[in-house]
Length: 108
Image (cartoon, rainbow, N blue to C red):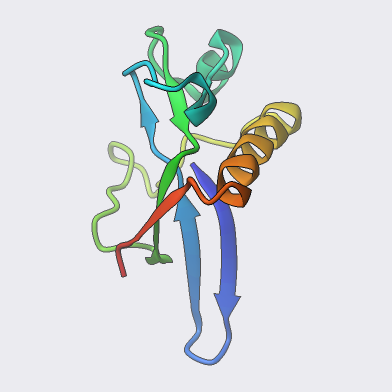
């Protein structure tokens, strides 16, 4: 899930911060936001419980060398999150970042 994208006109690149999605329940409930079943259906994801981890993320130039297209399409994404849920994820990520608990790993 991309939470931030910043264009760098000097070298015509875009840097993004991506939060991982996992089926593993978080050790600390504040470190992740559960994806509601309706949102998972909207995105075409499986029915198993999933969380967006807000305690850590990856930062890289878009598109990253390790991204893979979905199936036989030209897409890298499953779609947009509903705005209210997206704002919930951003607020949780910002809270962790302000507390200096969020870990961003550069993959550039």
